Structures are given as structure tokens and as C-alpha cells.
Length: 306
Image (tube, rainbow, N blue to C red; front, side, top):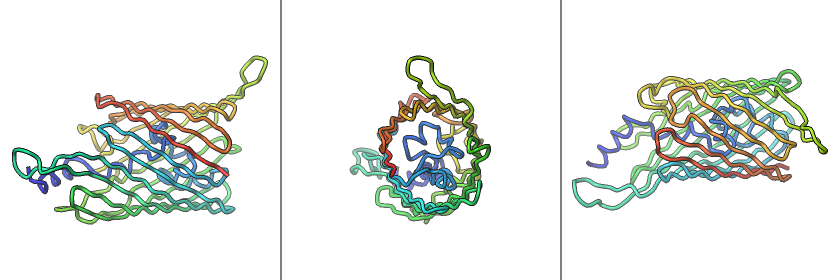
């Protein structure tokens, strides 16, 4: 199969920029990307930039994810708080190697890589209980010797109510376009998301030493905007939305356990993970099994707050 034919088929049957709908950080992945109303620090601008305003301190975030099929992703970001304004920036890259190139049956002509890159800048502004945010992405995709550049924007809004115990959020993500890659431009997976999180339960364990536990419940609804917004959706109902719900248990500001479940066309309905606080650091881990038998993904991250 000629390379240009292979590339055309890939663009027709799947969206190469699906990585924009996959959480870049361990924390977001463990939440099943259901973080439209859950602040995750610097990485918040990737799902809902308005949540940057709710980060308590300036911080850094670095992550490495080993996806299925030997796909590797790296993400690093930072945010700075200046009164009501919060600024952030980051880089997210994903790459898969050792694809065989052929223009006719028989031995391959060698191997090539497929890679995607997003360079991002973001800002959020808080006015009372309301926060608004914007993210701008510069995008680049590389397949064999083909190159294409593009841009995308995320728009977000959030609000905190009831003494900051309830957070509401919504965002419109991946609005933009790409240059042509060989025969046509790769479409962006535009998606609308809305969510809620609530700190519902807080209690102390019994025993000689009290151990405070805070339980946060969250839910998220994601709706693809165009026919190419397949993300990790199953092929038979790729354009349906999906519902995510889960819980976060914070134990004495030392351990944090996170789990989420998706209902809808997804190949990874369950995700889980944990965080360990060693002030001023937080170590994160996420585990994402695939229901299709492809294997499981593992993500590792570290956050620094100051």
C-alpha cells in the first residue's frame, strides 16, 4: 500500500489528533478526563482553563505516560498566580515509533514515526465566584516525511458555590484547524464538556490519632461537536457523548485516591490512581485498563507548588 493511500485511509477512519481528548497528566487520566469541574493545577488548562483560578499556589507539573501499543506521551506545564489573573503554559507531545513503510508488497523500505505536539498558553481571570479561561494551542503533526501545523482554542467557565464546596464547570475544547497533511487536513476533535464536583463527606476516623478524610464526588458529560470527534470512542457509536462519574478521597492531606467510570462509547471505561503529598511535592500515578484487550496504560507525574 502506498504511503499516501495509507495516510488517506488513516484520516478517513480515525482522527490523528485524538491525543487532544486524552488527559495529559496522571491526575486527569485517573479522573477519566472528567475534570471539567475538578481543579488539577497547571494541567487544568487542557480540560477547562477557567479552573486555573482555583489553584491555591503557583506550581509546576511534569508527567510521563506509557500508553498502549508502545505509544509514549510527555507533558510539562507551569502556572503563575497574580491576584485575580492566572497565567499558564505547557508542552504536550506523543509519539509512536517503528511503523514499517512500504510502497509495494514485500520487504519494508524502513521504519518511521508518528508524532503529535501541542505548545500551549492559557489565562484565567476570577471575578467573585465566577472564573473565565482561555487556552491557545499551537499544533504539529508528523507522519513519515509529512508535516502539518495548526491551532486550536479551549474556552472555559467555572463557578464555586456553598463556601467553595461545590464547583460547576463547562468548556468548549479544540476549536481550530490544521494545514493539509498530504491529501487533506486532519480534523480536530471538538468537544463540549460540562461537569460538577462537590465535597460532600468529611469525617475523622476513630482511634488514638484522628485521621481526617474528605470525599469529593464528581460527574462530567462530554458531547462531541463534529463527526470526527472519535477520541477513544468505539467505532459503532463514535459520535455519541459519554458520562463520567467518580470520587476522590483525600486522607489527611497525605494520600489522595481517585477513581472514575465512563458510561458511553469508550474503550477505557475505568480509571484509577493515587497521589502522595510530600510538601511541597505531590507524586501522582494513574492506571487505565482497556476493555478491548489492548493492555493497560500507566502514567506517572510530579507536581511542585510554591
